[in-house]
Length: 408
Image: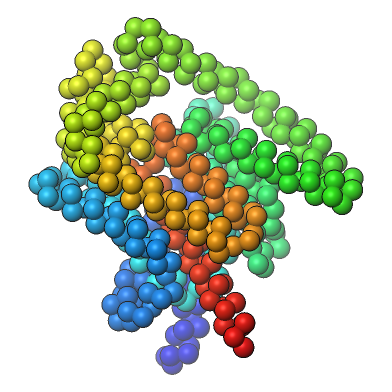
């Protein structure tokens, strides 16, 4: 096989691999993790045999992510936590692998477009699969896995799918409405923490559509807004009782915990964990207490709620979990990674839709992470850091291509 033929095949196959990886991981199919891993390994090989390829990577983002991973891994090893039962090491290793993902995208001409296409396929598959499972079981939907994890993956895939492609597939066209297609699967998972992005993005979309309609005096856009409101009401009506019930149960638990100090439910146990965790963190704020013994220490400090807190394997809060795992230093590095992503998108792109989606994506990570361990699961880790890495790699390429054209 000639070199040109090899490069041609890699362009086709690598792009297809990224599309399938995104589609598969959206519906929690393990093949998605394997394909993302293969692209990362390809990047690692390229980094070794051709170090100059790092020029194509988003440098600041990659350095910050690598620093965060090295700090987390190094701190864990220095504590002597070892490999047995230390899930933090495996999660940090996945995040470190993402550092090499931009290099693994070398043969993909438009990596963000490939990821968007995969997300759209994933959203369609999620809609069909979740509705079918709900029709068969009538229960909370998880597609055979944790419904809370699926809830996040649905919302994230919906956000990515709404981004514009340069050359969209005819039967999967561009449109902000992709996010709202994912609303039904998100509701069927009954994951409250994943619902916040929908009203937030709906407000932004309605404002933009309204401005466009008034600016152009476009009666059709105003009609679309009215129709969208009616459709949303019809779709949401069957879920109103579920939404109200989930919200009321949470408020009851909070009131009971504030009154008695005893936690017995879901929300109030989280409050008890966080109260205890913050007391523990105050003793070693810079480096935390580590992942392995974290819950044992927190439960011992939880008083009457020791037994309930001891049932959990993590603190169900992104900020508190990271602070206890790697201290405020590790948490600061993590926050810098997300901050770098948003700043880079705003600096390198004038696309309003991409800017909005970048901000709301990070909002999803932290709003969902307020009640769940969003970075303590390989599915969500790959999607979160994979999306940010692919986006910044794509923007960096476009910027370099523009600079070359301007020189010519």
